[in-house]
Length: 105
Image (cartoon, rainbow, N blue to C red; front, top):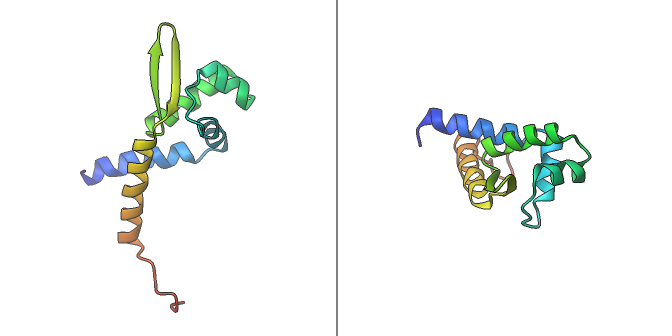
């Protein structure tokens, strides 16, 4: 993965996680549920347009996928991409900010 692509994907991933509303939405997917915009809006107590905007950011960040069935679009967490992004981010942090020994201050 090139440096600029890594940076763009990582920024999108971190941006998607930076909002309390998006974190709340992700909690709704913890059981593996596939939910519509309306279901997310109702469960999170937000408007449908807000839910749609937040789901778009989550999709761009690689945290959710969407599938269309007729007029309905269902969203669900994307554990594989989340795991991949966390691994890439962990590797990056280990290189730029290696952990120090337990006795170091």
